[in-house]
Length: 272
Image (cartoon, rainbow, N blue to C red):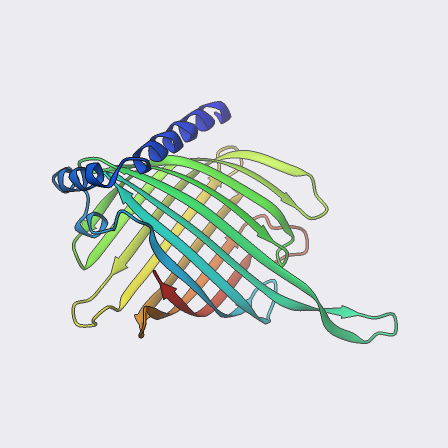
């Protein structure tokens, strides 16, 4: 299974790299043809150069920590022909209390988390093939690292200009290590969905919601669930305000840690 996933992931990456290397004239022709082949108007409207956002703000947490911290986010996406590539990275940190030998506590130890992902989606008539690679590090949950490579199929249940709802299903390979424990490696099945709504009555305002679920093929008690929902509000000079809630559930966390972590984030971003 690992070899199959590695081969398919390499093939997807090679295909995407080749598509992204095409010149602008060929890309424009492919985009026009792609509309007839099932690419949504929103994706067809993506420029041939990268577009995205860089944002920073504060986050309020509960679960393995009850503190306020600072967060940052960056994403970029590009359409080339019928291939959509999306890259994201999120980070956060906070000050943790340290106790001196005399019993005095102070905020001096910085702990944080960072997560990045690359998604490649190849659209066909009524479905798409996706490949996803993600990496996660979380001091707060005692997670040294978690790498997930997944492949599968998806489709749009709703594909309108103002409302899009997609679902995905596939397999994933997970490698992870917690503080004080050995590394682990297992194969899982994955399901996910995402909804984006841009109402006509609110100029430029967009609502979004996404969730995914992974479960070990051999040990169903070991599973992960993640979800987020929020709104992006345009401001001025390419700036926007994003408010979102995030929930991460791990049924088998590191010893002494909670299963559920939640975040409430407020970020101001620059759109490019």
